[in-house]
Amino acid sequence: MANLTFDFTGRSVVVTGAARGVGRAIAERFTGAGASVFLVDFDADAVAATAAELGATGIAADVSDTAAVTAVVDRVVTDTGRLDVLVNNAGVLRDGVLWKLTDDDYETVMAVHAGGTFRFTRAAVPQFRAQGSGRVVNVTSYTGLHGNVGQSNYAMAKAGIIGFTRTAAKELARFGVTVNAISPNARTRMVESIPQAKLDELAAQIPMGRFAEPSEMADAVAFLASDEAAYVTGVVLPVDGGLSI
Ligand SMILES: NC(=O)c1ccc[n+]([C@@H]2O[C@H](COP(=O)([O-])OP(=O)(O)OC[C@H]3O[C@@H](n4cnc5c(N)ncnc54)[C@H](O)[C@@H]3O)[C@@H](O)[C@H]2O)c1
Figure 1 (cartoon, helix red, strand yellow):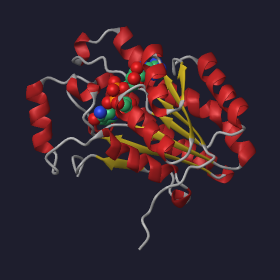
Figure 2 (tube, rainbow, N blue to C red):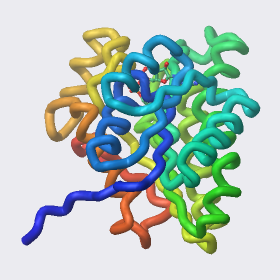
Figure 3 (cartoon, rainbow, N blue to C red):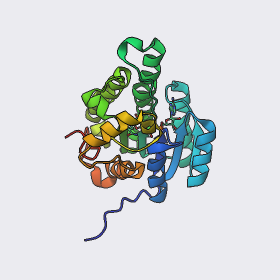
Figure 4 (cartoon, rainbow, N blue to C red):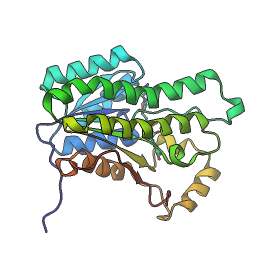
């Protein structure tokens, strides 16, 4: 049986939050598969450095800023004539128990996760419709599905992404566009920021007994973004070693 390798030659791919972590691994997966990849991140220095390492294009932009998001989509379409894959991955944490969270903790997390996903997907729709094709892969979380102490703001944003994914999937199916999400569980800076005792507790709950490498998230995203996944839409795919079973 031939190996299943997803080919993205000639495709234009945008990955948000791509300076590091899961986003970087996703961007690397697409550059390795022949795509023109645009890495978008709030952190201008880091995204420039990562893009240079990957031989891709780095763009400093805030996904919660409509004008910045529109400018990214316009640039991608101007440079390559298309936009094939959008991966809404950018994220931040502002953890704390509900009664200690500030308005800013709530608004920042909502604006980046839910707001960024909404704004970027909305901005991509005209090009997707013109092409009659497109792939959106959003990034949600176990917390959005099941909740987690200290993350009510994040849970709300990530649960919102699930409802958004299913709704956009229904709205965009007629245009040949699929919209799916992954629920990751990878060893990144975001995970490293969790206290060690909590990390050990979490790892013990994962049937696989370990956190994934970010590249394992990228493989799932590549599938959902591939031609082979044309009939898969509105799905939330846990890539979590069985954590959510
Ligand atoms: N690592 C995990 O196990 C895990 C689990 C569940 C969900 N996730 C989700 O996966 C995604 C990536 O997580 P990660 O672990 O790689 O995190 P990370 O902190 O390593 O990377 C997130 C990136 O997003 C960028 N970013 C933050 N705010 C931004 C903004 N307003 N505009 C543009 N870029 C912005 C950051 O600069 C950073 O480079 C996030 O959405 C996160 O919630 C991760």
